[in-house]
Length: 140
Image 1: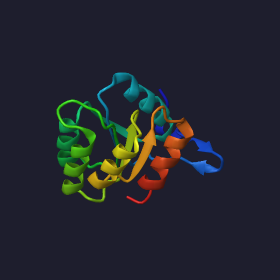
Image 2 (image 1 turned 90 degrees about the vertical axis):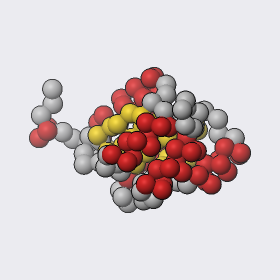
Image 3 (image 1 turned 30 degrees about the vertical axis):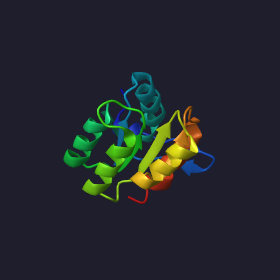
């Protein structure tokens, strides 16, 4: 195990991705999607929470201090649009980045209407996801 003092955040194209004091909630019902994001974000030092459906995402937003949400659209219980609306009611300043395999213009419009801040189409290139998160997480 790496000691905290040895931690060095990843640097790509001159940008340092250091989110050691940030908490990111991943709302996605597919295990492999979470594992991909977990693997990608591990070097950044971010604390990750996993909500396996929209209802869990809403509950976590109420009970935890979250800096950013990566939100899937198609999930059981409550979909990503409704979960985003509810999360924005709880704390409007939490950035919500949509990550979806269904990036249709209709979904993008619904995403904007629900309060989503950014839209990423799956499969998401690792660097694109890091840049998108960095754009919003540093503001919070």
